[in-house]
Amino acid sequence: METQLSISEEKSQVLDEALLLVNEADKTLMDLLEQCFLVWGKKMKTVEISFPPIISIKDLETINYFEDHPTQAVFLSAIPSYTNPSEGSYANNAEPLQYALNPAACYHAYISQRDQEIDEMVRISTQTKCFRNQPPYSSTGRMFTFTQRKFVFMGGSQEVRNALKSSEKFVYELGTALGLELGEQPSQAPNYIEDPKLGKVKALFLADKEFMYKSFPALCHTNFHRNYFCKRLNVKLSNGRYAFAGCLGVIPEYWLLSLKDKYGSDMTTITQLLNNYLNINAQ
Image (cartoon, rainbow, N blue to C red; front, side, top):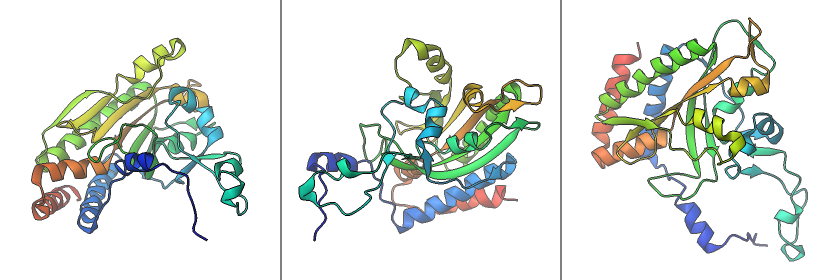
């Protein structure tokens, strides 16, 4: 029997715009970009950790995700047994929600330090596929699903700030090596709702930076979360105060789109530039 899904054609077309097809040549470039980002991780002395692609709803509630991002979550569920379409919607028979697909690569890193006391700054690098319900989508703009690498720092306020500031040089060095003219701007991400209770937090987070190429979405961004997550996860410094946290985020798909905008179908030049960067820096 043919499976029937109740997705409108209009909705499907919109979603298709949010899904980037990575062909064999693009995959080669994505792999080279990933090697470049791993070089950054080694230079920043991060520990590479692979976290699950899903995250529990309880953990997201702990860090106030649904208050801060009320419409972005994409949930994961299951149908406990075969359901005849004539008996109603599949959604009506789904099990209660327990998990969401990862909305950001950094959350697992913060949660991994729950109830810990930090003596030395925590430096974690991780990569995952992320999923966000944040239309409007386009083939060269915001995507429903994308790869995200995060370099996460947790420790004292100033040392986290210093780590974030130092991380910016890697973004510009790679941009220059690839011939991309990068600029920066305060974060434009639609992360926080307009709520008087969250106004201060919203203002603090919007001090973050985005690193841009032309009008493409941010290739990289830095977030200084202050003690926002550590307070909720009870992560403290040895002096008993709550730790501070921040991260450098990288989205390879936007680097790929920027390179193709700059060089068109000249994959040989792009590959050579990436290999040149790796030959110089992967020492």
